[in-house]
Length: 318
Ligand SMILES: Nc1ncnc2c1ncn2[C@@H]1O[C@H](COP(=O)(O)OP(=O)(O)O)[C@@H](O)[C@H]1O
Ligand SMILES: N[C@@H](CCOP(=O)(O)O)C(=O)O
Image (cartoon, rainbow, N blue to C red; front, side):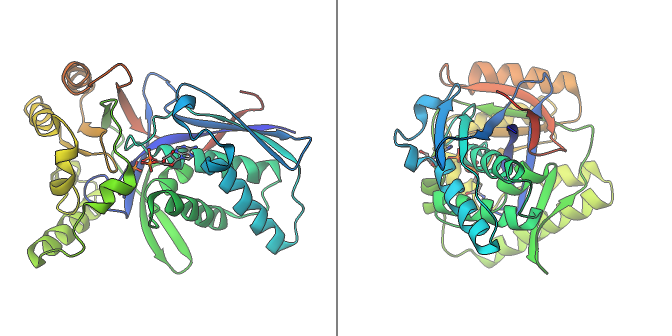
């Protein structure tokens, strides 16, 4: 039996919830903005091949690919349970640019671990698998944050509660929102974008952060889209990261003047996201961003919706 799992792009933080809020997105035109992993019967304990548009950006040594580490930790967990590990051949289709703020490493991690689990008839439950995904993300970025892996795996808008044995819970969002994702084509490594953040914050920032995040979650649960959009503000990371993103301030200004509800940095950047409740406005902003925010031929802009499904099986071959 072989299985292919697709894992979608995600917006870490969604501006207002540094490390604790994330959203999975998929383009409305059906483009696969995410990685896929094929797991099939192998002739040795483990092998990994890589294909896809961004295969050249991956580490050259297979052992340095996070997918290899995923197999190692998956094997460790099966060993703890006394479950048998099957010889497996994995193929990673790397469609996501690395260091983009679109949760590229999360896409590979989630697709690999979900595919491995399905290939072995699901010996790990959802929480066990998500904990492993977080462990892998922490290895790459230097600290544990679930805001990419949780939405990528579970879909939708996810809030990290990390209590009572629960890692993440879903937050209702607004079905009519479009999320315009603009990747300029340059790289901002997550670990570096984390290293420039302050280790302590002023009381007024802590209060503002609490008000925005609490207000956003409240507005989502009480069905107030206008209030929710007003609360999408970042006092934790954006003031420090903005300088890593050429043209971000100008692009945000344009988007707001053109009728967007909110804009912010996706994850640690350089991708920016823009929320609109009108498709024509979203498409107009997307065109402008393509002309003014994208810096080279590797960049792209997609009009997306929240991806309610998260990772999923797309078939048995790539
Ligand atoms: N399959 C993979 N996908 C993405 N990055 C990987 C993978 N395997 C190893 N890496 C390494 O992990 C790091 C990911 O960088 P990061 O800035 O966290 O990317 P992103 O924010 O896009 O997830 C890079 O150093 C990259 O070489
Ligand atoms: N909460 C993290 C999210 C990083 O997302 P990525 O897509 O840039 O990996 C952070 O802001 O550091």
